[in-house]
Image 1: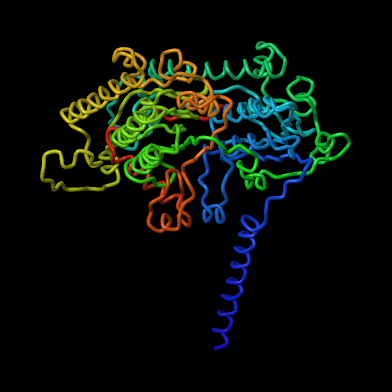
Image 2 (image 1 turned 180 degrees about the vertical axis):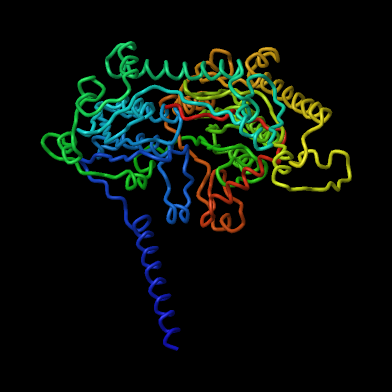
Length: 569
């Protein structure tokens, strides 16, 4: 009896604790108005996971936290630029888990904010490998480093692993057909080193991104490109070395930053980004005028609804269709950050973009990745905008499987075949493809590739031959893609919105109201599984969901996917 009473008391204690925590969170998020006082600076701590868009999801945000996204930074710098209470921005920079185009988007947003006459200060404590982040910091008025902080700007590149030798030892054979020589997504499993086409493509991409990096940093720091290249070749700087090299503007401990964060001898008040996120753009006069839908499409492309971290064709198509059918929406901007995926799922989304294009302006804004399937869902738009560092194109198709027959034999695993239909075990791991089956698979992939070419040619107003020359699986940077007609303009989300306004007949100076998808997940959506594109299920384990995603991609042949990429610094 006494034991049962103790269990009850423990349960009651934790129930009260959880209830109090939830109530405190609800009050802080919804009950207490955001407190932004006149004479403030906006404090942004930017490091770690940096997604394109974090779907507003109360339960997920409460239990797992919601990382700052590119959209968050973009929107809140827009707000701060017109908010008379915000006088400066302090950007605390740490290592970012993203590629160059996302950094470029934020860099553009910082420069746009500075055009308001307000200052941005970048503060770095320690950054041993920091090229992307330093590129971002150079958009600020001043860069401040901790007195003992390391600054590593050592260039971009890395090592590409090739696993074929190890797989051969294990008895695993990667059997993939692809179109064509630049479609290298599975080369790490099928080759022992770079093919000529693979090396040509990788070197061209890295060289273009590196040149953009050097050019922009040199302009920002008032140095020649040769001086910046020499600084990068040296690689590592610490404290006074970085200051003497002209890479930073000051060395300060955090408690000394107050000297920079004051105005007319009056110390500015701190406003955290988490607090400022709660300020409505409408309260600052930014949400008026005609509506423009901004739809985020992030992750691999799969059929059906959107499982963890993916673009479900049905989910994204529903969002585009809602924007198309909403008469109050004047134009649609589709923000794409995807390496591709299922060719069929990509075509489902493509069809919805074609229908939308017939009724209202459709503009695509490309982030880090918009290749293969990511390009497929973009190519029907009226205009395509990409950053110079965006990886796009990859017009090609692949399909195949891993044969584990040799591994099973080594492990003593046996199996017996029972099949009705000659190809019933076509994708079985217990046997390799026959020569006839590989020929059949190649035929299917070539057929899909021809569809890809014809639709890209129609959408981009190019000939089939022009697209094939730019295709064959090759990945291009945004700058290279513009030169060959795969995209229209270089820029970010602001550029895409300007183009959408122009196509919709909205005056350049007129403000618009942004309607952003995905929207907040409803209670019904949580329990029914019907989520808006990009939303995440609360309480779910990410690893099982990720494995289900990989399983889905494995089942969907052929694929329109980009190659594997190493971090670029």
